[in-house]
Length: 177
Image (tube, rainbow, N blue to C red; front, side):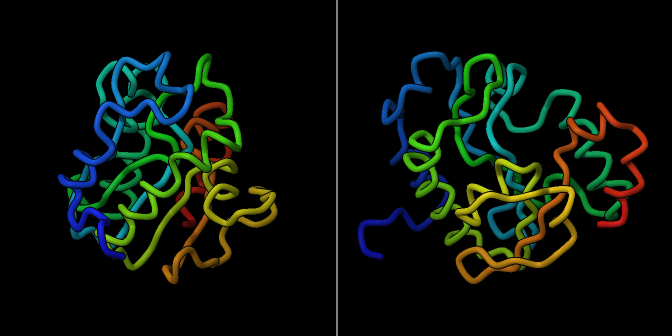
């Protein structure tokens, strides 16, 4: 554990102007994550999209607005009370799925974010995020709503908010989270 940054600011400084994988070549901003450093609930998506890359903040586009609505209206929390981040911190080109090598390069930073925050629950958003944290293929339609474990923390996988936007009839299923 020694040499690991012990708070989010020093972890962000340690990551720096990251060039550890090829995703750095196309990014505008590295999207580290935001929210409470002592959040009980951490949301993890797969990676930033175009609006997130432009803003340097996670989940600020349409899917992010829906996520904020779910947090605030559905769960009765404030967005700033939870922590929101992604498996990869830089936008994959054309919003493609992050490649295994990119995930492996970036995952230790997410793991350290979890170690620092010590949440009670992690909620992964979408199949890629679940599969990246659980280290195996994941069928979101079949396996969502079950409890798993990541680094000793309870993990619940659900649909990515973008999926709900494409399939509005699914919204009630997300509320059942």
